[in-house]
Length: 383
Image 1 (spheres, one colour):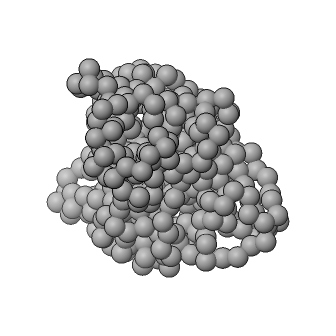
Image 2 (cartoon, rainbow, N blue to C red):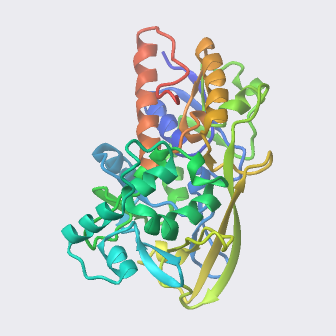
């Protein structure tokens, strides 16, 4: 049986689900409120410089998932790319994540890997046995000096709260390395699409059974006549925010151009709380196979997300978790819609996990409909 399906959002989640189900013969309508596909990984050529710009901030593809890596390479040519992040602290430039070079430079030493591990073990706050928050996790891992230099101020700017109010799990994404490896990620496959993510998503959506409507905001009326809806917008928006809005952080970008090379790397973090921006990104360094005389550079400032702002990072503190539980309970009671993606499930998701979840959602839909069973509201539960 061929179904008529509505997919809200033309980002990675919507595109992957649309393609999979279109190839099974279903008729897919994708609505996207913006004037482009690819969501927040949208890329566009800067008219002034010719640089390929990550319009909503940098996106680097990294994964250990072979199937996901093969999938994106089916639709775009990927170049190898190692993401190397620098940070300014105390008037010096250091490498992140914290590695052997960072440790030796910061403490003015020439330690071996084992000696560096022993040093951090000595500096760690051993009174903290089970870290309850970000600050305690950092103090337990690396001690007060490295925490103050690299994490405290940056985290305050990024999240707008004291690090002691954030969950400890946030810091676990930034390991300490006792080697000189300064690759920001540790996944097997890392790369950048040659012509950007918008072309990648455009190719995924290029199928005769898929119709894409840009500049089209979702309304409940659009779902009429559809057999099922996959919704990648904010879950609270589906319900009209009637019991409250989930909290997000958003970003402001200050663009400027520069003749030549502005900072010598793609991303420079600013660790001090006294500097208002969290980082400066120089976008021609995200495509090192290209050559440009001029450069496009952005300062990023994080702040609370307002009603008309683009939501970037779900906050997921106690207040938000309680509200999320209420929305999830309502979703579980309904039928006809499945919530997907970063906004639909209110989770921080890297691109590879977004694609993996979308693949799983599309396959699950195919399986349950073949059996005549209802599709659940969530394939990956957000709680």
